[in-house]
Image (cartoon, one colour):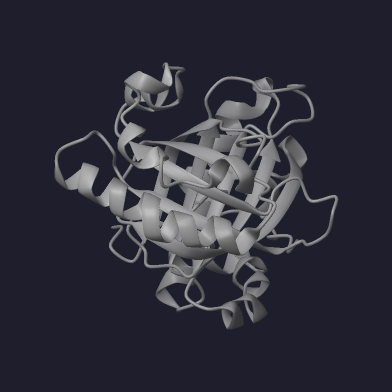
Amino acid sequence: MKKVILFVILALGIQQAQAQYKFLQYRNVPEKNEVEFVKRETQYWSKIAKENIKSGKMLAWSLWKKVGVIGDSETKPNYLFVNDFKSVADFDTMESGWADPEKVLSDMKLAAIETNSISKVVATYIMKTEAQIQGEPKFVVVNYAKPTNIQAFVDENKNLWKPFFEKEQKNGFKLNGWGLQTVVYPQGNDVPFSALTWDGFTKISEALDQIQYRPSSQTRFAPIVKDSKMSTITPNGFELSPIYELVMYVDASTK
């Protein structure tokens, strides 16, 4: 990733880092380029991310792959980068950390490691973490929402759903982290979502079990649904709930 384009992952505060802000970058990678793309990002650009973390420019970096295909495979994103930051002030130096990769990888030429020519940036978002339950998920269900009232959406998730999920996780339910984020940038009516929640899991089967249909009488959410106003806050439900699988995660503890 030669240059992170400021505009979005997902990710999403999806691991250990206590990030307040996240930069999500969605990429479309043609199938023929996936092996080389993943190789270059995990073998080379992850090292640059590590240097950025060591120098205090960011807290964590991760790469996620979408499970399956949703929409046109030639235009829709199938990979997601998540860069974690402590404060909004960190965005002032974000791009500088990626500007000179050959300084970090002195034995490599840019042409041999760049991924812009084998992938396309589809969208980027800056997100603010409003609430989170720590976890180390291998899979995440990302629930994109466009609530009629963003404050009501945040309040209910903080005061109703987060305590519920915390209790479930402590009681052994197969939930490996949870988070709530709101969109900082871009803003406007054309933005497809204004907030998201994510549910973390260790196995794909657990993620699928989370999202499959069940009659309301059989859902584990039945005890708190009576207190929820989500039917009016998000009358159409979530805009989309894809599953992403972790490819690689880097933070200060990564060797």
